[in-house]
Image 1 (cartoon, rainbow, N blue to C red):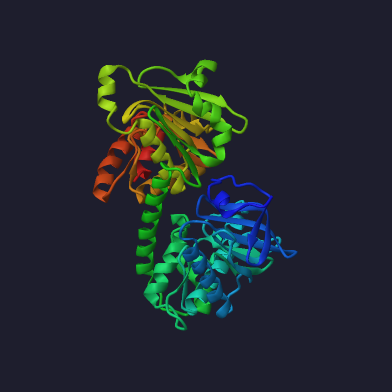
Image 2 (cartoon, rainbow, N blue to C red):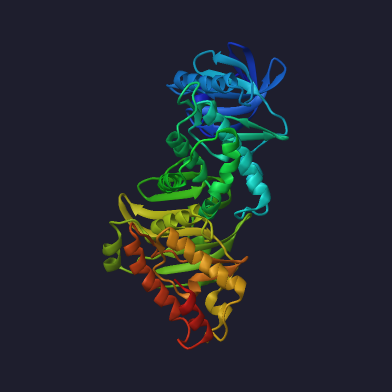
Length: 472
């Protein structure tokens, strides 16, 4: 099917496929779309003159600018002999828009895909270190040639066999042509890469930099680099929380006068019926909790075991205190997204719904994956007759170190809100969770959390004594 650019521009997230596109280099045949930014850019695999290619199609009102930036970036990589997919064809499309075709690398995978396929990625794991080393060596080559990858993540490196390719020419910035980046410029760029890793990797940054320094021996200031990493992490978290409330690649948002809903886009089909009628789940099965300010139930879909929490309005007086501010479901959704982003164990948040009358909030629902873990009160018993095992104790302390590092307090830190599952302690019931702007504010809130956890067991019990000694 021959398609014009206007049709591609207005096709949203599901453009037709396969299609043919008329270009200055001949007919482009697109077999499948790999990535779509609606109304702006489409990336697909296909054929041009019998050769398999990766094609990028630019369709926005600023298509020429983005096309030129992509082309310039790829040319810059080729000029300094940094491995990148070769340019096959480039130019204007009939009836508007621009395109670039590069060589399609068979049997290649991004470093992110390789990373995700690892069974373990704990700090120091040899295979994980090897992958990071390959990326850092490539980054060093870029910096040595005066180039910087401004969207520096493992998804922008493509591994075919043993050879690593840099992709995404649009993000290649020529900072200092023919001259290596300065130490500060390199630190700022490296911070973008290291900020993508879990904070537990921070202790190994200097070790990881060995591969970088082999090809670009700069004087890197580890303290400044660490400061920049923290800054970038804060910016990335803020950006993620913003995305979690708007329609984008990761999330599907629907809003009208009567309701607001957001769902993880990949789960939208599986959760469709549940999002349309969230109360149906409370009628079909026995609830885990019923009444008061919230009700909780468990339900199965084709793909998931889920927990649904409904935030009730108990009456007019209660509604008057709630209608003008984001619901507790809204707050819990963002709290769970924050924890997941920080790699702190909590059941995956999949959807959130608010019933509304214009700007006024009413009832709300939060849908999360079900965690089959045992809560700590069940695990250790009401009497706290024994200390936790070494694995359990270390997992609990690891969770607390993560919360302290992120300056997060739970707000209702009782034993039933902590689950032991798969070697980790998971947090649930995030209605009262807060991220604090200062250490002093977090410390005050942590004292409350700490005391609440200790109250679960008799003060003289072995478990309570162990907690009192070991909790921060």
